[in-house]
Length: 400
Image (cartoon, rainbow, N blue to C red; front, side, top):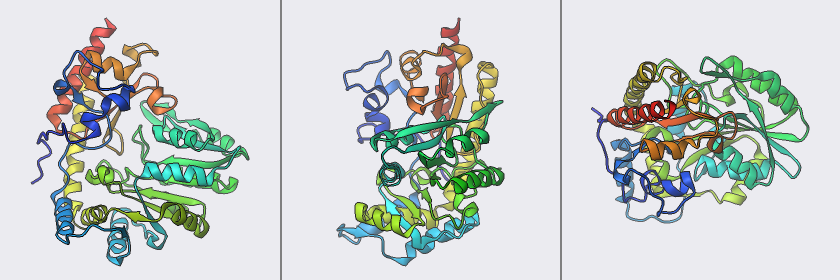
């Protein structure tokens, strides 16, 4: 019914994936060259999909275009709130407080705004590492210091060091905790007991908490997601960020949900963000939540099968690599330290020696990411297979 094996040409569409990788990954201009032509590069890097956006989303956009005017737009129709509330109830058994819901042009722009609003001069931002890079970038942009609480790795599974988290959260200068849940890049889905311990620490020390839950729909079939807000229903200093962007491959429409419990902070947000949005973004998002569940269910099956391919191929051809299938996301987090030196520039190495674009190392993921690579496998399985073969061949040659 859905053709996830279709290869779609994205070149010359202003796509960051195909046309902007030199600047984003390598901080270089278009003159940067590789032994492989651009057409031969395998792109497993930026976290959007190479799958066609669901037809129900495209239909919703077409229906909105038929209204023929694309003027200034604010989210006012109750139908949108009803659809999103229903999605949260059915997927997470959570009654999302949509009267607290605001829109942002993305979770990352929201993080940049919130870091400035919630963390003042002399205060610090705390997050778990390895970390999604923009957590650090938002902190630096706000002129604040950051504090890392390293996750503990046991047999390729990452767990929270609660003693360390408690110690760092107890510092009076640490006032904001940004949680990635499910976690990027490791793919962990934090369970109720873990979330309750996080909630206890943050509430006792009075930290603001931003829970980035953008990957919450992209679960393995055996997993379920618990919104942090479900565990902290009465905590006024909690902000939840969700979006259709990763789930339905509409990141370019720049729309996300920011659920702010604090009346004061919500008023500040409205003053600084004006709450305007793209009319096509509203239509696409509503269409996705209203009619996109069957597509998502099929996608999850496809991704589970692709992750099994990754696990089996690495076990056979790169046995010293450390990898376990993530509980969520479409991102494979692989430890290849057994095959390379710690000082190896991983993205540059694989671009030059394998013709594969990927992200990895501390330069991308803040801390505790040396020797790890992140592969985006949300692409046709033939592309994943070719990318894996090239990665393995390059590492084996390098390790000899």
